[in-house]
Length: 351
Image (cartoon, rainbow, N blue to C red):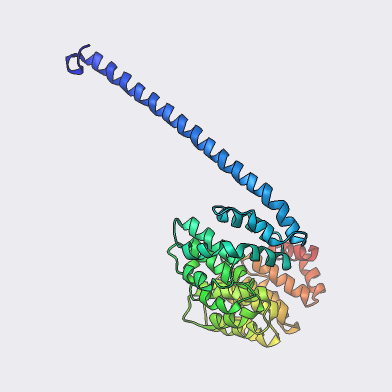
């Protein structure tokens, strides 16, 4: 058989194509075999997992109703099955409450020590999963793990630790979360404020102090304000009113206006009036909404003037303010017109 150098160009090209096709065929066969192996391995793992769950679940259900002792379930967990067992318990802890959760945590305790020692190993997803597991099944005694995880290089791990710390049973830890709040700016503010509010009314003083502190950035203070609104903390109205008089960030202003609208009083009216003419329409709209909550008949002229605002959202709030004041006759007269203001008024009357 002639060597490649002895062939003419056509034969050389043909030989290269044949070799390439053979290599591709070998690769295709190899990939197929790899896919079959991975499929077999995954099916095997799934089968092992299903068998373990089938063994554990009936025992766990009996333990929860005190028909079998917890030791019987512990005896069914093999030396290498701790991780699977914790994942199994996590499925139930999300669905149960009260004393049943305490039972699950007691069952998990013997399997958590190694996780508390090794939580910072592996990928970010693995570290986050470890912190989440500790938070749901073994918070007590592992506080230092969560505090350390707040400073993990991965934002995912850090936010999972923050969720574990922001719980009603230990509101004092929320101060650690607040100190790192600016780190979570890639997360939606509604998620963060809900997380903080989930810690309960015990965190309200911390949130008020954070909102009042001008050293923090406006975005983070707005998150704290939204949490206070969700908590409906009455003392937050004074703090929010003070911020309204000293800040010009639209998002922070809106968050504080929502607090005043939710828990404010008549004495907060004065700080709202200048914001009715603020350049950004969301601020004007929420200022009118808050004024509707804390104002009185003296504000009728403010609402009437705001009906001509170029933003339809502001005009809608103005019309709703008039309706709240009982100015039904004025609204009915305005609804008879043929301009944009009449359309807005008719929409509010129909609500």
